[in-house]
Length: 187
Ligand SMILES: [Fe+2]
Ligand SMILES: [Fe+2]
Image (cartoon, rainbow, N blue to C red; front, side, top):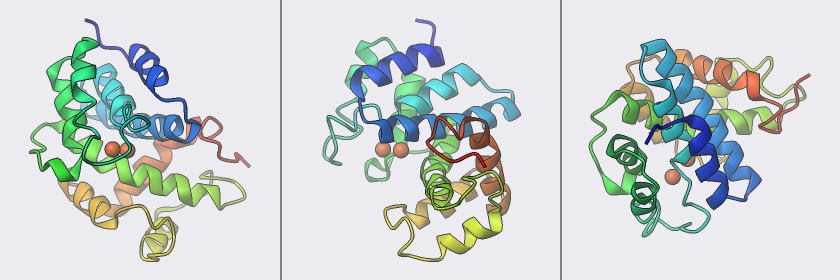
């Protein structure tokens, strides 16, 4: 099968009705897609993997099922092993090696995209004027967006070999064009 982001979106929306989960998928897609483009990698494949990384979360909201019980469904849908393995590797509890650029980028963007989204929700202009410095400050406040695993943000940043500010800036810039779709105010 030809992996495209549109096909992945179709799969995602068949299994995921929650707007919050769809927005999370779109945010991670934007970031991973930007890194694919920058690295000259297969952008459609990377975007598809990002869109699908939590595709089964609505039906498998617990770690004894997500994402491992979603993987066979993706295989059945015809997605290649490279994508399925990337999806599986985003989960810390599975302890799989992140041995491809795609796996690294997906892991690096997953939690941070969620965190930047949370930062944008409490600002009058969303992420329009959001700077890395203010994101970094909020990362140090445990009560803000408490569900975001800070250790995964830092580990992911190291994995893709960037400084934290640089990675945060890339994520903000990647998400800006779809801010409205993400439910963020656009100033
Ligand atoms: Fe997940
Ligand atoms: Fe996620």
